[in-house]
Length: 85
Image 1 (spheres, rainbow, N blue to C red):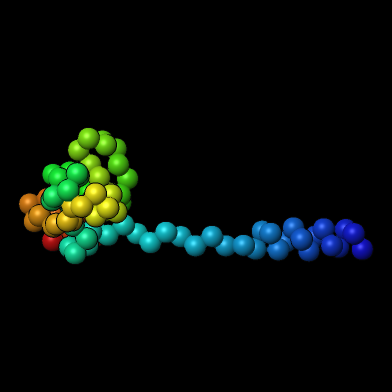
Image 2 (image 1 turned 45 degrees about the horizontal axis):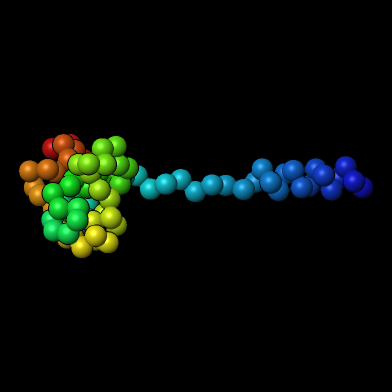
């Protein structure tokens, strides 16, 4: 009885599926640079992973510090929306 219970518990633990993260996509409405506020002039990475804190900020960090995220076309990604043209 105990072995059957342990087997049932181990199979239910292994059956849990972790959802995959959605692919990172460049969104024109998202913004890629912050204007105004404390984070003025800092770039906003597409995945919000800051590698250089003196030149980059997150979308949330920009709005919290009083800035406005803006999309600059000359900073658009090389492969927009994952489609090569």
